[in-house]
Image 1 (tube, rainbow, N blue to C red):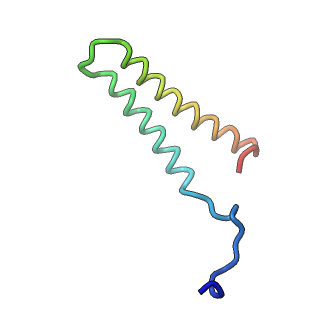
Image 2: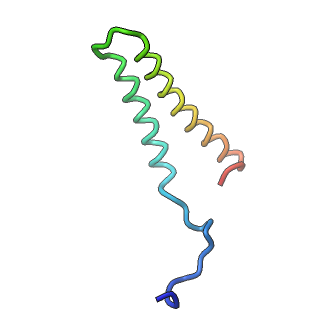
Image 3: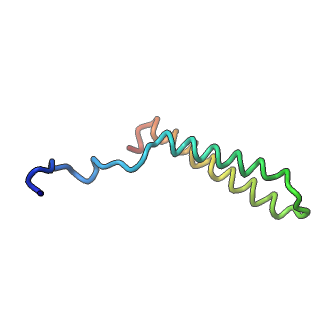
Length: 73
C-alpha cells in the first residue's frame, strides 16, 4: 500500500510532545528533591538526588534557551 501513503521527509517526523517532556522533567526533579526527606543517614544520597535534579533542570533550561534563540528546531 505504498502508493496511498504520503511522501514525507524524515525531518517532518518529530518525536513526542516537547511541552510534555519539559513538564515530566520538572516533575521528576521535584520528586527527586522531595526524596531528600527520607530515612537515609549519609549525605551521599543527598548529593546524588540534588545533582540529578539540578542536571534535569539545567537540560530543560538549556533546551528552552536554545529554542528561543533559534539554535535548535
